Length: 530
Image (cartoon, rainbow, N blue to C red; front, top):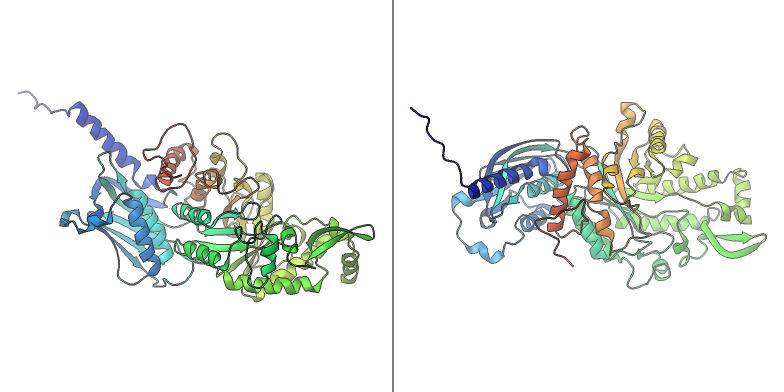
């Protein structure tokens, strides 16, 4: 008796089967960026219909309410709200139920906020359990990336179990709004893209030498005279509140930087007697250097400014800068030289800078703020307060690894930025260099390595404005996003990351982010913006 014949699928049916299998593999948890810590997925999948889908949280929570609206539109971008009146079969319904261990929905994310979550997807329901609302936001992002659409327009999600949390607590993006002014909408769009990548800190390098666009309540003359334009190129108090609110609803902290004593040329245009008059011989040259550290009025000004900044920005961190101070003007000024003699500093101007920064750190500490400073402050003054966070920005790997060892040995928390200055660009897939960085790969004890609290992608603005910010930033910054979130061993292969990052780049395009291509190819949903 011959064996029964197995009916083979037709050519078209077979191709459709292959397509389904490809889509299933492409849209499992392996396709989530950054990669979750632990995940289990199945080929079992469930259809989703916009008219039958809902988010559910048992209590009132403004952060979740806003997120539910955003993510519904993200998951079902073409759904028309007037379709909501259509009847839905029970078999077509699907609920994502959120539970929080902590019911605090009205606060701001901070340095200790938990972002841990668990996500379980099964037939007609998904359960998202998180310790805080900030963890729930990360879980909602993961869920949104698990949903996919086949070539016939049907949405699906696979049976999935995920337990996830970030490897590092501080995962930042720096934007420089002094060298080129960035319109408010550009900043808000960047915050959206940060949330898709699970970045959680916006480091706002808001002022610098070229311009002072922050409109101060206490010192309004500085932006009037120091901004590129006093009306069109400023951030009003309302603008700043909007940025902080937009960031908060996405679980993102806003850390402002008011860098001094250097990088302050724009400050002096509207605040007389703040900067140091430079001399040529015994005569003022008409130029000015860093903030005058010999004048008591400088410290009174800084105390008033940072009192305002502390009230405007709710985050516990303030970045004080402290980098790249040119001593030549100080050396030329007779009053500064007299102050040096009075203080017993001799001819060591690093001691003068140390005195200045120590005074500024004490001002912000009195305001219950944690100071962040660039590594220069540690390099010339190793006895700064232990709770000061050091920010490493200099050097090649050998140099910044040495610095990591020195600073952590002294007991300071550290942020690493040196390998992620992506305002520098190279032809080809330079994201690979960012992806291979390991922030804890330096000579030191386990306790030292725990002091590395995270890292930051820096986008300095010399050659960047609203016209090219987004494609220069994304998806190159996404490489650092996965490095700072995901498990080191699971994300050690650039080659395994490449197709996943290509797919995620297409996700960013579909969400309206102008992310540049990695390689030759195409996305199913090409960028439709202007």
